[in-house]
Length: 482
Image (tube, rainbow, N blue to C red; front, side, top):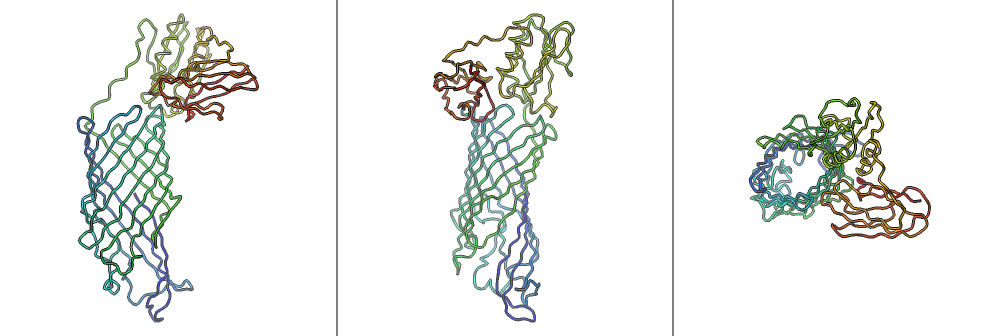
C-alpha cells in the first residue's frame, strides 16, 4: 500500500544572508506500508490471524520565499528534513468466528494491536523547538483492542460484502501520547469474470479522533482528527490454484480534517495471497441422467440424427447448477434428444454469458443459441420450443400468481389484458434467490418476504411488453399486455 502526499504551509524562519523572513515549507512525502497477514483456520468456524505491517516514510523538504525563490535556513532540519524512515508498525492479532445467517456469511473478529512500532518523544514541547526532532510515529506504544465484523453474500457471478472495524485507545504511551481512536467501514460489490478474474468497486470510510499529549503547550498541535470518504475499485487475478494477485485503488471524494493535516490524492494497494493446507473441494456432481444421452465434450458439435442441446457451464456458475436438472427434465419430455455439456470455467469469453445453451436439430442445423440474461425460465421455454415441444400455454387473465424459485420468476411470462385492473401475486419460495423484492416497470417496488404472498394491483393502459425484475436487476420476467 502506498500514497504520495505534498503539503505546503507558511512559517517564519532565519534565512541565510536575509535574516528572519516569511517563508513557505514545501514538503513531499511518500508513505508505503507492506503487510504480512497470516490466517489459520480452526475447527467449528473459528480462525486466528496475525497482521504485521512494515512502514516506510520518505520525505523531502524545500523552502521558498514570497517570490518563489528557494532559500536556505540558518538552522535547517529542526521540524523537517530529507530522510527515509523504515520500521515495524504495531502488529495486530485477531481471533474470529464465522457462521451462516441465511444467505449471508457473517464473521466477527476481536483482538488487539501489540506496541512494537517505534514511538517518538513529544515534538511540541518548548525544548523540541530548538533542536531537531521527529514527528513521524511508527506505532502507538500501547496495546489497543480491535473489534471488527464482516458480512458477505454471493450469487451467480456476483458477491456483496460489507465491513466495520474499530481500534480503541485507552491510555497514553511512555512519552505521554494517547493515540486517537480509529474507525473504518465500507461496502463493495464484486463480479467474477471467468475463473481467474474478479473485479470490485465500492465505498470506504476511514476516521480517527484527535491524539492527546499529556504535555502540549498548544492544543491545536498534532493530529486533531479527520474523516475520509473514498471510492474504491480493484481487480484480483487467480494466478494459480493457491496464489492470487490483486490491485486496489482508493480515491478520496470527501475529507474533513481538523488542523493542518495532510491530504492524500489516492491510495494504491498491491496484494498477493497464498493459501495452503485446505482440503480439496468436492467433485462436481451432475443431476441423474440415467436413460438420457448425456456426455461431457470439449467442443460444440451436433449428434448425428438427434436433436442436440449444448449446455455451456462453469464450476463457479451457480445459475448453471440450477438450470441443469430443469434442462434434463425437458430432455426426458421429448424424443431423440442428446445433451452435451461443455465446461468453460477457464474460458473468460463466456464469463458474462452464462448460463448459455445452444440447440441443433436432427439435421445438424443450429436453431437456437442464447444466454439466460437473468431469466432462466425464459431460456428454458425457448429450449422447449426449439426441441419440438409445444409452448407453455398462457391465458389472458386479470390475475396471475408468480413464484420466485431458485431459477428465478416462474412463469417467466404472464399475459394480462390492457386497460383494466389486474392483480399480480408474487410469492418467494427460495432462500437462495436474490429476488427479495420486485420492481415492475421501474415504478412499482415491493418487498418479497419469504413464503408470504404479496399482491400488486395495477392497470397497464396500452398493449405491449412490461419488464419486472429483482431489486438488483439480475433476475427478470415480463408481462405480455394485450
